[in-house]
Length: 294
Picture 1 (tube, rainbow, N blue to C red):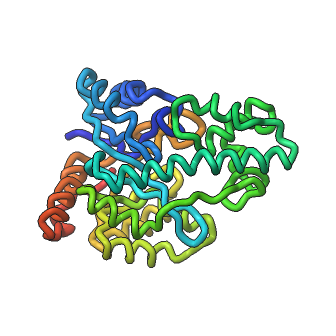
Picture 2 (cartoon, rainbow, N blue to C red; picture 1 turned 120 degrees about the horizontal axis):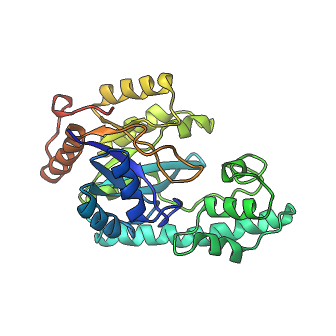
């Protein structure tokens, strides 16, 4: 039975590899499928799917949509949606456009803090990808300010709430889940520990609210979530009848982890597809019809 990594990134957002290269790495890792879930866009999916046909790796349509709650980020993974759905296209474009303004303001703050980088340098790092914080971080590495990009994600620099941090202009997670549902897809809350580690709290209550709006699952198995956290999110998924997924959050660089570190079964992917059908027909899919993440 095939195993899937349902959270991967290419250089169409903040990953380092082209979409076809992500598929190649997945094949070498023995995976039967992946979802390409670049931030706030699907521009790399066609290339990845073409490579997948050649390499016999199934590539699912995905996207990691940026949302905001309690003055901090919440990431929602979307699968099986209609990428041409007009309102979704417009919202994702709006989020991507704001990334440019946000990055410009971050660079300005960094310059005020004595960091000798320019926005033009950040754009060069990003290339054709949507500009994001990892590109700002790479520019800081290139300037010798930090040793690795992850070292820029600290309170001293550009971590959430850091000295040079600029918040995103994004939808609420509630609106995001509803929009994905309206576009015919299913949504999974990504790495919920990120919400908790920001000190915001209330994550379980938030997920309960999202479940009532059509949230399909929780990314239980993720590199940033240890056994204790995974047990907590698994229990919540069982209580709310949500599907458990697993993934690596692969970026091909210092962010994320080794592709296939955590995976999701073919049965569970089928359950996510069934949730799409259930949404379309307004019929629930119960836990007994689900597989489990591995």
